[in-house]
Length: 257
Image (cartoon, rainbow, N blue to C red; front, side):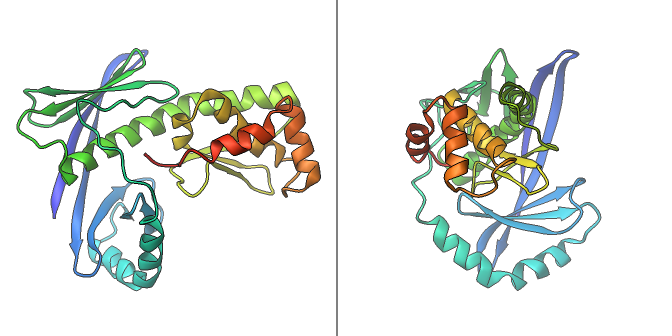
C-alpha cells in the first residue's frame, strides 16, 4: 500500500489556490491493485471500474476493513467488469511527447526539480511538472498523471457544461430540472424521467460539435424518453439535419483516454 501525493496549482478570480491530492493503492490477494479513496461527499461505500481499474470509495469515518469486506463480497461482479474492460483500446501513455487536448485546455508535461508532481492550469494550458528522478512510463506515474488530468477535467466540466446546456435549452425551447457532472465511462450522458441530466466530464475530450450533439441528445430526452422515430425527428430538427452524421462520428470516441 502506498500514497499518491500531488499538488495542484489552479487559478480563479482570487488568484492561485492549491489542491492536495491523497489517494492510495491496496494490493488485494485476488484482484491485485485497488485504488482506495476517502471522500467527504460520499454517503455510502461505492465500487466502480474505470479504465480497467478497481476504485473503492469510502465515506469519511468508515473503517477501511468495512470497505474491503464490501470489495470481497463483489468479486464476481468485479471480475465480470474487468474482463469487459480488457476489450478497451490500449491506454494513451502520458510523457513529455504526448499530444493531448480537451475542449478547454491543452496538456504540456515537463520535468522539474520538484519532489512531487505539480499540476498548474492557467490560460487554457494544463502544465504537469514531473520529478526528474521518476520513470514517467511506470504505472504509478501514469496513475498520478491520469488522476490529476481527471481532477482538472471534472473542474472544467463543472465550469463550462452547465452553461452550454442552459444556452442550448433556451435556444431550442427545452427545460430540465438539474444537471450533474459525473465520471461515467459507460455513457456520455443520461436523462431521467424527472428531467435530471447527468453528463460525463469526459465530454470535454470530444470536438465542440459532438459535445453539443450529446447535450442536445439529453435535452431531447426531456420530451421523448425513448429512441423512437419522434426522438430522432426532434434530434434532426435541433441539429439542422446533422444528427445522423454526428451519431456515426461519435462512435469513434471513447469515454476514457
